[in-house]
Image (cartoon, rainbow, N blue to C red):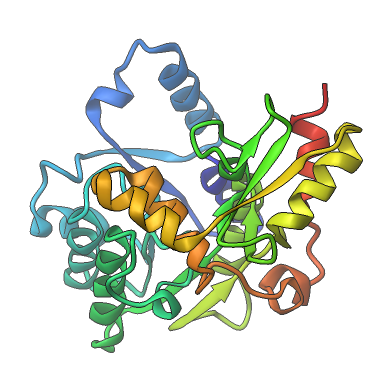
Length: 291
């Protein structure tokens, strides 16, 4: 939704530009209050709703849906399954799109490399290799680091608000880049409409780049109480994963603990270089956790 909102607003300043969104028929016709609210907002934004199912449709059927558009942006995430990113990329190429933004809103998979604790990342590297191996469709990858809110999710257990503790992944000095979904949506729209056109490159975003030790300090400053600092070392996290190899939370903990490809200097980010204000970790804590 943040991507759609910002694309719709930017499109209004570019004559002749329209935005569409691919949704399942079950979502379009749903009586679920949340889905009904989203569909109503999409229509109010003037976005065309296209019915389709990325799981049920073949690559050629998806290509036919994509073909009328200049640019397609993948926002389905991993929830659609490990093979879906490649399926969508192949459809984008078959459609002969001018530009394709694959779902890569996360870490730098090139730096992490194959065989990381999070095996889903290998599928993202496959997509990059496919796109780099052709010259008919331009591509753009947007690297965002971790979604800021995910760092504070109780299920992740890095920030334990009940016990006033931060469980640092790898070490207290391990860095992580954080960006909020709202900022990702706004910055994605800026990248899409940027002049000169951005093509065939990785664009790095960063709401903040912090160590886990700094996260504990920011929590103390904003919430006004001390947070214990603990370290969850890489061998420990990999051992826990080995005992529960299908647990995606444990996969993410291990790969972020290794510290490769999960952080980059904020000064080098697209938003910083273009003077675009984004939400820092301290600001997110103040807006969402203060009580």
